[in-house]
Image 1 (tube, rainbow, N blue to C red):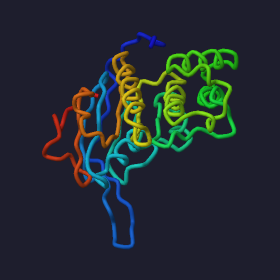
Image 2 (cartoon, one colour):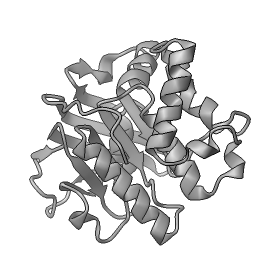
Image 3 (spheres, one colour):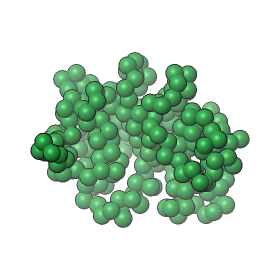
Image 4 (cartoon, rainbow, N blue to C red):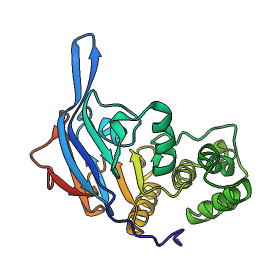
Length: 243
């Protein structure tokens, strides 16, 4: 797999300061994230692990600006994510964060190529001709260029996830957030996707992945372990983790 860029990013810091995310339920307030403080540095492949309900997805959604903290501060690359307007947040996320979902979230009425071009069109980062050429190069990077003009439903699950990763890379973001990216894939395809995410980290991007994979510690640089919305006692470097 050839790199789209050899640009090694440094200094991209993520800081959470006393962050809480609460939800109102019939049983009362539920704290998905509970007064969590964490500092993460650029350049590594990090796994967020923990049992179901531990707050893993909530944590990465907060960092990516897909969710809002009830209280506390979230800083990504010097940007106060917690205080941005919805419009500013959407534009910032489109340019600086690539998101990979467990269920792919490709638009079914657009071709694979059009799905990858969409973030570039939304943010206006490239002219139309440039965005098409870049999308094709990204599909080549993830080894599915031949699927460019097909609808997502014509692709296998693994191919759809590769397309989702290509889309996440569209605007050359410093941060890739992947929520259970191998959850719906067979073992062989999951291994391929993990290798691809690891390659992206080795090229200088920050990759933050939620996973249930049992042997993930041997595949990533760092593991952040959560329990009931807090860093668990087994978290590696609980207050300062390389990201």
